[in-house]
Amino acid sequence: MSETANGPAARMVAWQVDSYGPFENSAKLNADVGSPAATVGPKDVLVRVRASSVNPIDVLMAEGYGQVLLGRIRQAKNMSLCRPVEFPLTLGRDFSGEVVATGIDVPAVDFTVGDSVMGVVAPYQQGCHAELVVAPAAQVIKKPKHMSDEEASSLLYTGLTAWCALKVSGGLYVLNASGKNVLVLGGSGGVGNCAIQILKSWGAKVTTTCSTNAINLVKGLGPDNVIDYTTEDAHKQIEQFGKYDLILDAAGIPYDSINKYMPLLKCWSFSGFITLRSPILHNTDSYGMIAGMLKNAYDLVVPNIVSGAVFKGSSIRWGTFMPLESGIKELAQLAEEKKLVVPIDSVFEFADMKDAFKKVKNGHIRGKVVVTFNDTKINTKN
Image 1 (cartoon, one colour):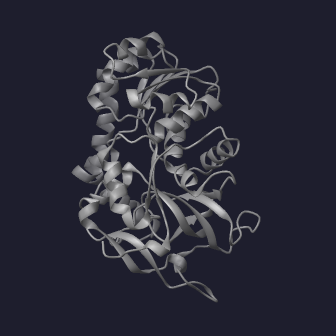
Image 2 (cartoon, helix red, strand yellow):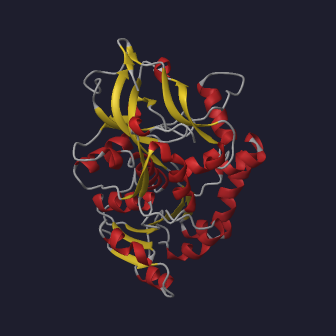
Image 3 (cartoon, one colour):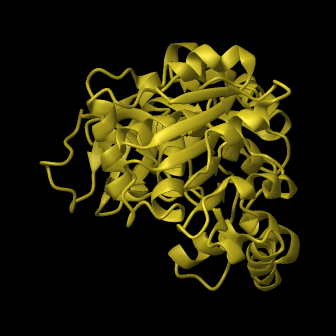
């Protein structure tokens, strides 16, 4: 991308979707996209993207997931009576890159042009699968020097998903995590990777599950116990290391399979099963805002009663990503201290974004899928 004397050029390259559907069918690599430089607010940062990751939420959003609620959030942000135009939509949640410009209210001590940073954008915001991205300064932080752009671009979305699930949904904002006994289902994926390391940094005891071919990777993250979920006695092994203060499902087990884990929770100790498969966006997509929210309330209350959780002082809870500045700062500090590393499954060129999405959609990845931006290899005939 070229720059003028006044800053970034007016056009850029970005992957965009013009309609909902599988990414491989709906996405186009557009070399004539308007630069977001004009939309930089007083507290925003404009970043030239060097690398970004592909998350499962991107794959789902390409097919229309969350369009009702996310559209209402965009509408509220714009203070408009009309829903904003959704397309063209740029996906991508977390990134690393170089600061190009800052808003007038962003202190120079925080960011200056040329700083290497990593950041994250919420699902209702335009994403980072583009040359340039605008993000609130509170959602951007300087990249630890020892981290590669690929590693830095993979940290914040999954890291914050794990951090918020544990701190907010798990109550560890209030409760001391030290000594807590926690089960992480699915330790080999991005959220599971981060959850294990975050919990160990807090002094928790961690048991986790993964498949046979991921055991060595997961053991390297430092959990106390690793269980191969493909073995016949996997559940008995899980029971052996219980009872648990918290169970975090980073594997995405079916909602109706949660009940078999509820007896593994400690009674009357604010214990909980945290699922990342919250039906909030699905319900609003299926039933609309009002009926969808009523369905959400039903889906939260009824399983807690049917499972018997509320009669034992435990609960089923929903974990979700939130772009909290306190979480971003803690994750960056852990990464700086080399207490949080990001396993990389595979790296793709920016022009091969469709292949990266296909990799994530097919599942069973070990770590994160990353896309690097190399403008000498851009091919817009996709």
